[in-house]
Image 1: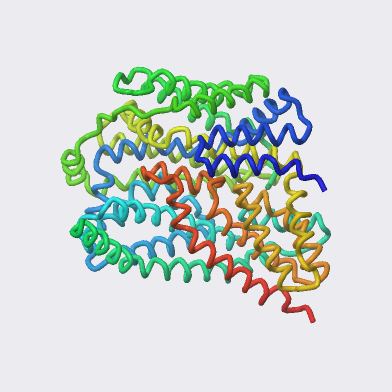
Image 2 (image 1 turned 120 degrees about the vertical axis):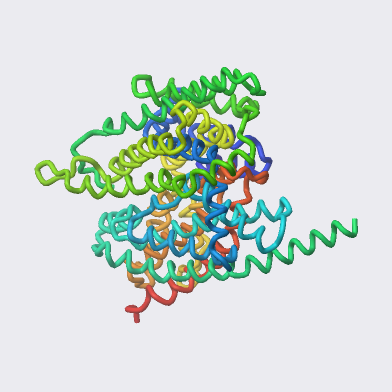
Amino acid sequence: MNWWPLIGVLVVAIGFMLRLNALLVVVAAGFATGIAAGMDILEILAATGDGFLNNRFLMIFVLTLPVIGLLERNGLREQAERWVLGLRGLSTGRLLIAYQALRQSAAAISLTHLGGHPQTVRPLLAPMAEATATRTHGRLPDSVRERLRAMCAATDNVGLFFGEDVFVAFGAVLLAQAFLAQNSIVVEPLAIALWALPTAIAALLIHGARLSRLDRRMAAEIARLRAAGAAG
Amino acid sequence: MSNTALLPVTALTPVYVLIGLFLLAAAWHAARDDSHPRRRSSALFWGLLAMLFLIGDGLPSAVVGAVIVALALIAGAGGVGRGVRRERCADERAAQAARLGNRLFLPVLLIPLVTVVGVIASKLLLVDGKPLLSGQQVTLLALSLGCVLALLAACRATRESPARAVDAGRGLLEAIGWAALLPLVLAVLGGLFAAAGVGESIASLVASVVPTDNRLACVLAYCLGMAAFTMVMGNAFAAFPVITGGVGLPLLVGVHHAEPASMVAIGMLAGYCGTLMTPMAANFNIVPAALLELRDANAVIKAQIPTALLLLAANVAIMEWVVFRHAG
């Protein structure tokens, strides 16, 4: 049993734990792994370069930034707040539950691009959530605001992840089917996609239950902070 | 996954050129921004990165690799900063919002709309009954087109210039900072992990500690193995063949006669629970924290951990309940 390949995992774990610059940690882990695999420096540099060129498409999200930046300059976030405050009686929890349900159903019919962190979470969902929370709870303390924003991003991720697998032509389904076929097990992609449904429902229920308690938790946290502030 | 496309990978060149031009413009704006605390090194960082998008294909791989190392060193030395943004004040933005109203939403909606229409339209582009482009190429091209059209619509709606938009985009890019490059570099690391056999080491580690005659222990090993290895790789796709080949097929299907289709479906989703809990999945967890200007880079992960753990437990239960339904 060869343990040396795991040295890169160790470098990442230690580097992240010490909160060193993640970019530097990951490049260092690549070198450690390459050396453990018996590659020389030039080979590691070449593998890094090839990997970069093949995965360049991962940076495509930056193309949304000029659009979002220009619209934010012209009040997109403020308009998102105005719009959501027009919906009377919408609590922050319900807003996020509705977003998750929409995001997950859209992803399940392959519309994975209806949403995303630069396109919808930052300019639309986060300001809407903050506006509804401020309407209910008054001005939000910084720690509460941070947690709420993080929850918006989390809700987008959960909706996307557990929706997209239900779609039969999605990459993960085809990957799983191709892998089974390589191992002489023939199944229909539809059979795989179908069995993503129970987990999709569980995700909706579990994350939804957390979101339905969100307003009560924010109220308790704010009351606690105010009491601590008054006592101090 | 569909490698049957007729056009080669170079079909994506226009996408890379667009990204490169934006990064180059960001470097130029940073270089000229005298309010910028790290003017030169920031401009160098974005400029080098732009170069890799514009002319990277013509460079030897090792040179590209050396530039990546240089970028990591610049970032590690704290060389990537933010200009002191001369943003519009809140009152001005509120006034614009009141003036423009829901017209502001239209360009945002245009991005997914064009992407979806483009993907559907491309299905009709057949040469000799084969698709002209692969699914991923189509999505990326359509998304880029969506961004360009949305940019034009946004300029029209706000009566501002594309140059102003690029500078506003640069502000967002600097808010994300070097983390923008992290998903890419992690994908590179995943490739090196695979080449070095990290997966095989982990699979044999898992298999060596599991009591193979206990059915529930095997289900736990497969689901937790998927989640844990996904946390290491930052990607359930990378973990899937390793853990399914090392644990799922030999133990669950081989020993306990699990039904494979439902097993792989639920196993993949157990991996997704790991994605929610790892900084290695930077594009989902770290970049959004930067984009939302959170002080804690791990805030999104912390918000996701309760959901991820409960859902992982649910996956174990669903798998135990479902995959043995035909076994005796």
